[in-house]
Length: 369
Image 1 (cartoon, helix red, strand yellow):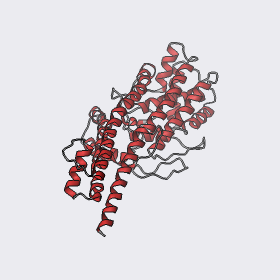
Image 2 (cartoon, helix red, strand yellow; image 1 turned 120 degrees about the vertical axis):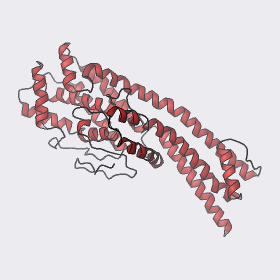
Image 3 (cartoon, rainbow, N blue to C red; image 1 turned 90 degrees about the vertical axis):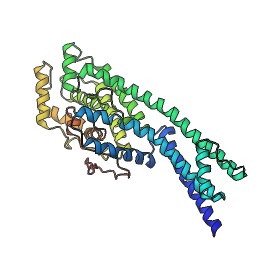
Image 4 (tube, rainbow, N blue to C red; image 1 turned 135 degrees about the vertical axis):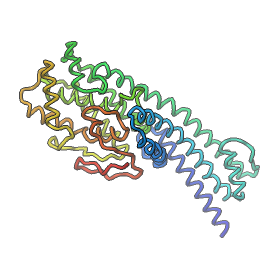
């Protein structure tokens, strides 16, 4: 009976170690979005004390400064959790091989951290020690290779976000974008702008689903955010396709499609429910009065708009419904700074540890806090 217990302990420890390795591989090595519960638990757990502290802050700049530390801190905590699980996962393995509990703890800690102060030359212990030491060094190597990759992706993302200040102001808005383009006589020459952002959306879909910590990395300035920049560009492209009295721009429409597919992909990574086949007549968070106010501003700037405003509104809403819910949910998730038509009306989403059922009615589940 005692032998059976030791065998079960060995198998339990091996299962824990394998689960930890699966989490590490999914988080760092896999080039596609794979759900890793352990990684999510770490980020959710680290978020709790940050949320408690946020409730005591009254200034946005203080809150932004605090949240700027969240993602890096959670990312550094993650390999520490992996290492702790590695150490405690090998304890029942050594015990199952015949060591006492105290010796098993010392053997596991010494092996994982390659300290060398607790070595047993027995064949099975020695082989297990080599395996554990290799895994410990492998986790450290993963972290060393992972950090440059994620910061490289962050830098690439922020280039266009920073450049958008020049075009659309801070916080960014489609009215500011078209005002500047009209001033310099580029209203009919924005195709390169849409093409750049089409590529940007494709890149963030790949990077922000593969590296799920990236959406929480904040811009260098508290007024900037990758998600509010995305919202402003998509609204600008939607206005260009629906409202401006200019020849059709397939570049703007491709930018729109690339954008809403990217936001949907990132939202799916965080189990945010949305309607992936919305009806163009479904309600959106932008009211008709808000739309008319923006169109009136464009007219005041001397920008030609289509004469049939009712049809233009329906066309705009038909584009916006494709990204309305993912945009607002992601703004709330990452605590984006206030920007028109995006974070100024977002819900306070948080990451769920369990998978949410996908709904097709375009309505999110109740937000968590």
